[in-house]
Image 1: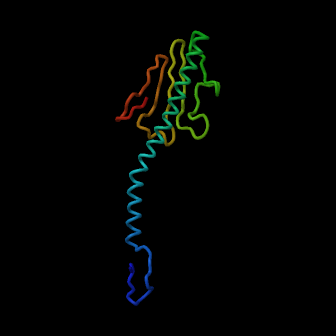
Image 2 (image 1 turned 135 degrees about the vertical axis):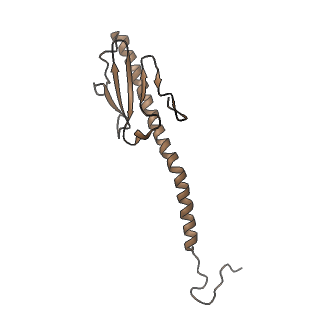
Image 3 (image 1 turned 135 degrees about the horizontal axis):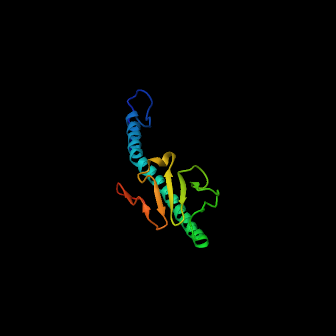
Amino acid sequence: MTFFRSSGKGRAGAAGFTLIELMVVVAVIAILATIAYPSYTEHVRSSKRALAKAEMVEYAQRAERYHTINNSYAGFTFRETGTTSVNSPRTGTASYAVSVNPAASTFVITAVPTGAQARDKCGTLTVNQANQKTPGNVSGVTCW
């Protein structure tokens, strides 16, 4: 069985891809990348948001322990820096700037997205001493 015919001119039985076939493959790859890349970046943002939320909950628990010992949130700082602001994640490139605003009977922990994370749909996240978290939902995305 012969798959290639030779016309007597050029290479006999030459095998390979034509330019049209290569262009079709490149077009298919470009379409797949166009669909997949936004989904990938949104997943990365969601993962970084989840890490920041976990750290904020941990800081809120520390603030509650501080309050139990001192009967006040005033004076509470992040143990890592001894200040009222840290970066999330704790190592590597910061995705959120986390800060706490402690008062005698209240606190608010705020995470402001930075860098590429600033395009996150949820924006700034907050949690307070009553475990009230904002924003709840934004554009169909459950932020907390």
